[in-house]
Amino acid sequence: MNHRLAMKSYSLGVALVVATVALSAAACIARMGLAPAGITRAGESLELPLGAFRFTERNGRTVTEAEFQNKVILVSFIFTRCPLSCPRITAVMKSIQDRASAHGVVLASITVDPDYDTPEILQAYAKRFGASSDGWWFLRTDKSRLLELVHERFKLSLSEAQPSEAAQGAEAIEHSDRIALVEGDRVVGYYDSTSPEAVERALARASRLAKPAWVKALPKVNASLNALCAVFLVAGWMLIRSYASRPRTAPNADPTTNQQVPRNPLGDLAVRAHVLCMVLALATSALFLSCYLLYHYQAGSMPYPHPGPSRIIYFTVLISHTILATLGVVPLVVLTLLRALRKEFHRHASIARITFPIWFYVSVTGVLIYWMLYQMPAPLGA
Image (cartoon, rainbow, N blue to C red; front, side):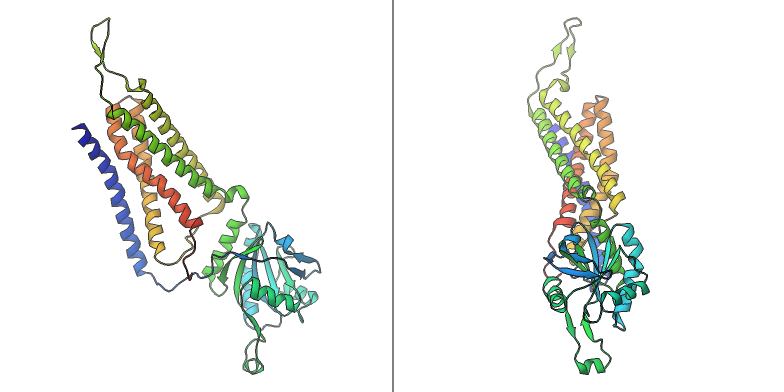
């Protein structure tokens, strides 16, 4: 009878998890089914090594790959004689200049017309757009190096227009209008400069990448804390199940009153080990919450970077995780702990059987969310 009652209590916790996941999935499918399917954030997650290079900045100083190290840079390609796209691209860069500087992000505009765009001309062009001297670089290099850099390193298009095309109003140099996000020695993403939303995503991601190393390490720390909490929960569950499965001995008689004294569960080694595991799980969860809030205070929220069906899976997991963490784990853990402190062990066990599957699900999905958000490879073709 007790075994069936225990299984029923576990079933209630599992049922709450399953129901929350199902409702979250239904909400995600309904919401994303109504959304346009055509917006694909292609190229916003990359790993392209830049290698060695050498530029001259508008003030005449030399900029090499060494100066890119430990910096996050938003790079655009322009030329000063460009009549249409380049003034627009440069205006976009100007619009984010102050916010980029506030987050430690450098802007760089590379000319694709180095034969004409001397440092003096770039200086005048930069002044025209109100570019700061330290937070926004205007760079040039030899034409042969430029072609190799753009084609082989940045993997972008660059070519001179044919005379017939130029006569029809095409720009003299055809080049990409995408903004490249560079972290140190690699290109990590491209963003469409014609889309205000894409530009905001570029700036937000650049700002996160420019955070101190300890801030950028917090998501991995949080995932590790979630994994550790899950380990403590399983260990504690196994210990208490071991205790519960052992045959009970008769209670002892009090020699002074000759009355039977119930056995104290806390005198059992397995129960004490169970208590230790659950205290460690609680402490780990509390530490996770502190680190989680600190990270989001410092870096803000991280948008899910991948298009396609994986978004439904991710948001289903995220929504169910959030609901069960706030409305399930917090009140249930508090109630379970209070009953244990009051030594109401039977009532403690009954609520703990509901708490355990919910708490375990929240811990495991915390690790899954980290992996999908930060480590999962981009889908093919994205």
